[in-house]
Length: 102
Image (cartoon, rainbow, N blue to C red; front, side, top):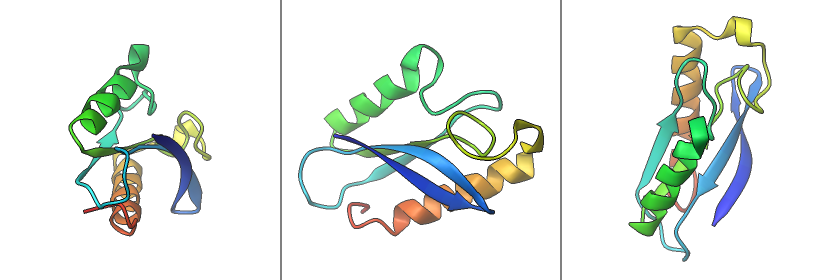
């Protein structure tokens, strides 16, 4: 099952797709970070396919757009390595708070 959420990070909202295996039990989670000019779907939807493969193995996947990319708020011109690091840490912290995260 795929869900959509916004993850707060440094005053921006990071668009996220959450792919989880069926069931309510907590599962391991992989947080996927796209490249500098990418977005959470990936080229030719390769990150979507990766998430589907993970869920087939019983692992959840959180894919998010960095601030200024894809459907996230913010300006692309503000995308820097420190900003990407902050967004990634915000996504990991948000994920750890979810009841389905083991």
